[in-house]
Image (cartoon, rainbow over all chains, first blue to last red; front, side):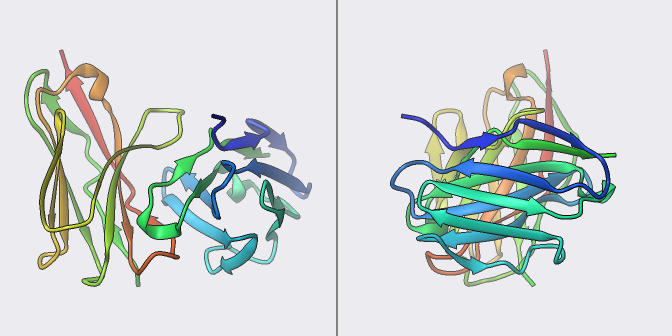
Length: 114
Length: 112
């Protein structure tokens, strides 16, 4: 049974460029979450979806960040334009029934913006 | 404000000892609590979940929850070097339908 799949695993880009991170949740899961992890701030919730609908995007740091979930098996997180302070590991996670259920994490995307 | 607090550590224990990891949270109405382990460069993986006051045991791991004190802990008995990792406490602050909020984690180092 495939887990949460994220791509790419590593992304190195220059400041000002657009970055798109991708996620395929576990089949049948109705919740999808995007988290960002840094040493300073830990694991921060950016946005989450229920049945493809964004529920809470209050964690999105600013308008440069956007996320979509066009169908149950695919989500993207886009940063445009990227800045060095966006460098972090971005995790996608999914689960069934939301907060009372454990999260299943993808392997993460390590983003470096130079 | 939804907050989950953990001591960052590092917590150092010798092999075979009991490691005690602690977590406090800001909302008395929180319902679900989880402990995740994260090895360096890897994604978090679930160790334990706990929903009711008291203790829950799973092998060498015991989770303890005290909702009145807004406190959850993880005990690791017979600690092994392979337990060396960062342990993340996660809390669901509302009913099902909302996301987990994570603490910054406690780094555990088990020396052989």
